Amino acid sequence: MNIFSKYCTIKAGCLLSSLSMAVLLSACTSIGKGVTEAILEKTEQEDTRVCQVWGKPFAGIDVNLVKSKGKTKMLFVHGVGDHIPGYTTEFLEKLAKALNLSVRSESQKNIELAAPLVPGKKLGNLRIAHLLNEENGKELTFYELTWSEITRQEKALLDFDNSGEYDFRRARVNSMLKRFSNDTGPDPIIYLGQSREAILAAYAQSFCWMASRDWEELPSSGEHVCLGLDDSAIDHIANDDYVVISHSLGSRIVIDGMQRIAHLLANQSKYATATIKVAATEKSMAALQNKRIPIFMLSNQLPMLQMGRELPEVAGQQASYCDPKGTNYHKRMVSETSLIAFSDPNDLLSYGIPPGYSDKYLDSRLCASITNVNINVAKVMDAFGLTDVANPLEAHVGYGQDDRVIALIAHGIGNQQTSPLIKQRCEFTKTVK
Image (cartoon, rainbow, N blue to C red; front, top):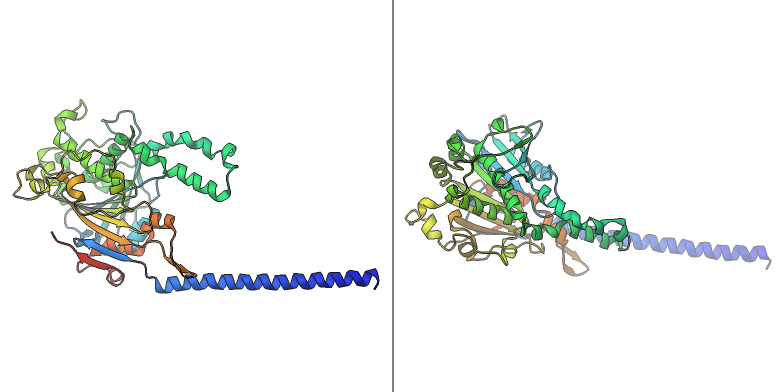
């Protein structure tokens, strides 16, 4: 055999081997793709994700969007991680569709928050949008609180760890995880420190703007201070409906914020300044005491974030403050705060609210009631016989994109307006004392 023939034989063998390998790889790829598609198709077709609701029936916000007097107003409070104004866009668009609100204000109003009790401190941004349906008169004013500006400077201490000097030493996946950890991990720690008062002041200011003004009366931009609930706000307080949405650490901020407002209203003379003589009048407080405020807590974290904390100023006295026959009924803050706590079992950072929690750990003046929603927002995969595979990150951040969560907020459960989706996909167990 000459060299040329030997070379051709070797080349033919290599070519044959290469072709065989290509066919094998193509087959493996096709098999892998087929298996993956089969798993995804099975998951999408069956979609056996859990949705269980325990507690009192509750109405969604849709039922009150058409009112002869007053408006419906919703305040959203974010959780850990750096956020910029507009972070609720996807959630708001899905909610607007569920509520059939087809018209939206061309631009949003942005108030730079400030508060007399936290002088010289920028408290973040309150972004307001107005949605409506021109045919049936439905209206919703949506308030988005972004408090990240308060913690951003302190979190900058970890910027060195994200720099090229350190980051290149990590594996790519670990680098992504470390950046996520550096963005989200510090917020609960910072909140327990000196920035807590500023964050709660940001919430109080947001609540004050929601409670005291309509869309047309709100400033379009610039730094402004809401000076309290005086007699000019009585009609708003008496006739408007307030709804609060929180996510993650936001659940702790909302409850602490409500408890702080209850404390300030009960101790107005203590905090009176040259600027603020009266934070709330007797008439406006009386109107507030008749309000029922639902709070939808997505990825609720109240039990975990209660650890190591002081107990509320007024606790274990719900009957005294919330029963019309109670001795302190006239001192309550509102008639009821309805806490609807959403948690995904595969969300490593969310929790249901256990029995007895409200009596011990929530301010009695809030007159809290509890409804737990146990819901899989992340799909549980059935792969190769393993039925315990779910993405914990999706389970933590996916609430606002889940159609069932949106339907519960929009139409509630245990009432005539309950969405067909909820009737089909969710189990409801009414609880009584």
